[in-house]
Amino acid sequence: MTQKYVAKIVPLNADGIGTSAHGEATFTQDADQLAIHIEMFDTPANTQHWEHFHGFPEGQAAQIATMAQDANHDGFVDLPETEAVSGTTMVPFDSAPQAMNIPNDTYPVSDAQGHFAYDITVPLAALQAKFKEAFGTDDLELDKRVIYIHGVPQSLTLPDTVAGEVGTYDAHVTLPIATGKIEKAN
Image (cartoon, rainbow, N blue to C red; front, side, top):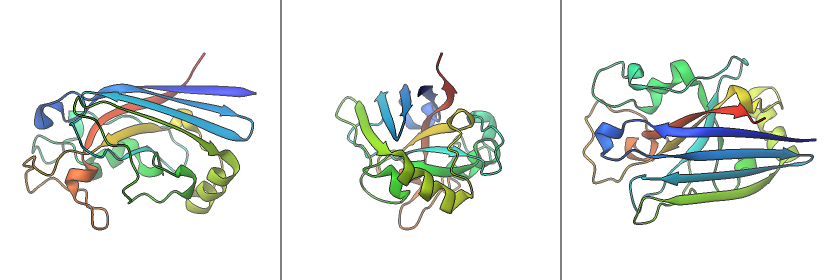
């Protein structure tokens, strides 16, 4: 049986980054594979954009962050500030989601107009096995997850209070620019 999920992706941190990134993601689960399509508009141009779904391993439903999550009032909702409502980073939408290797350089890069489209079909069993290894369950529970699009140019001046370092990647890479709640499609 085929099950489809959709997320309408809305801007986050638009005032601070100077653009209102938006788009849509669809996830189509069919037998032994998961087809993922993400199309984004008005992202920071010529920039690599990390993208993931976030959630709570315990199973509660994640919600998208809004500017209300700007706990330190620096004008930006950074990655750590999303965790209270959105949970942790779970699955990357990079060249191999099933590997669940978050920090890498195989994410989409936007064009000069800030557009990119991402399409991949993932072997579901491999993704579920890696997900179970990381989170103790093989149920992706997509309708309890949220998607985040991240990334601003290194040239953008961010306050020192903006956090989100992951390995050797700084807050420019991890700053959320858009988010959406994943929901079951009719």
